[in-house]
Structures are given as structure tokens and as C-alpha cells.
Image 1 (spheres, helix red, strand yellow):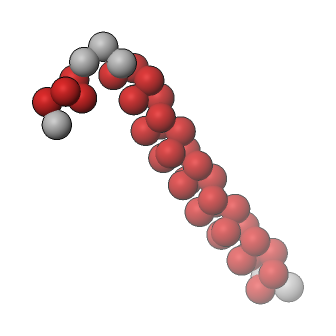
Image 2: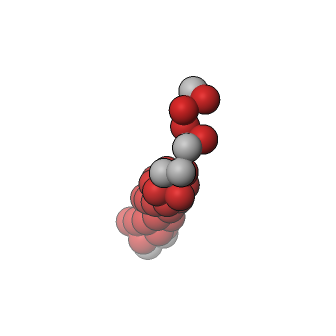
Length: 40
């Protein structure tokens, strides 16, 4: 996709960062929930 390198690249980077952050947050929450449920 050569058209992806146009000026709206900043919003694209922000969206990618938000997606990665949400994936990391869900993974982290899953690990914490797992420890909380099975750690007792």
C-alpha cells in the first residue's frame, strides 16, 4: 500500500499504538486475573 505513506500517517501511527496498547492491557489483565483466581 504505497498510499499509506501520505500525511495522515500520524493518525495511523496513533491507531496502531492504541491497538498495541489495548492488546497489552488485555494480556496484562488476563495474567492478573489468572493469578488472582488460581493463586489462592
